[in-house]
Structure formats: C-alpha cells, structure tokens
Amino acid sequence: MKNKAILHGEIECNNLGESGNGAVGQRRCCFKLGLDVELRNVAVAIQCEGGGIGLAQKLSLQQLIGWVKQKVAQGHAVYTVYECCGFGYTLHEQLVDAGATSFITTPMRLSLERRRHRFASTKQ
Image (cartoon, rainbow, N blue to C red; front, side, top):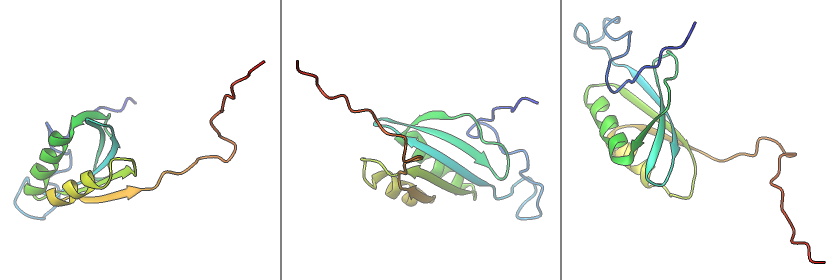
C-alpha cells in the first residue's frame, strides 16, 4: 500500500480527538520533526504521534519557527532533532524559545572503510 503524504501544517492528525484529554476534538498531539539545516532553508520531515513520516518539506527558518509556535500555542508537543553543523546553536535556541524540545546530534562516520578520496597532484 502506498504511503499517503500528509502536510501537517494544513490538516490535523488523524487521531486528534480520540482521547478523553481536553475538549472534544482537541487532543494534545506529539509532533516529531527531523531537520536538515541549510544556509537559508530547513528540510523538515514531520511525524505525528506514531504515524508515518511525511515527505520532507523545505521551509525558511522563519516559517519553521512560526509553525512550531503555532502548534505549541494549540497545546501540542513539538520535538526536533538535527545534526550538529557549522551554524552554531542559534536554531536550537530559537526552537526552544518557540516552545519545542530540541535535540542536536553529533555527526558520525557510518563506516571506518568509507573515506573521501584525496587526489594528490601528480607532477611528472
């Protein structure tokens, strides 16, 4: 069966309102965001509760922060994770200020045999 892409910014999770928490039709949802940080944009893959991970969407940093603020204001929990990069902790601090729980992972070599080839200049 094909996995249906869900843009969580446009529709609510399928299981919202199934729990007795809060008002009818409003249940706290847990959004998990995997981020791939670029200079001007962030590729964001979103998982709602235990559902499938949606297709990655490119957002500007301002759009991402605004989305997080909106979901937190609605009572949802937002968790983010991205790999440590050369941009410092600015995005992490912005996400935390917006109400998200942010995790930063360290880069890791997948295999010791996997190396970049260094091309030495050959002078003859």
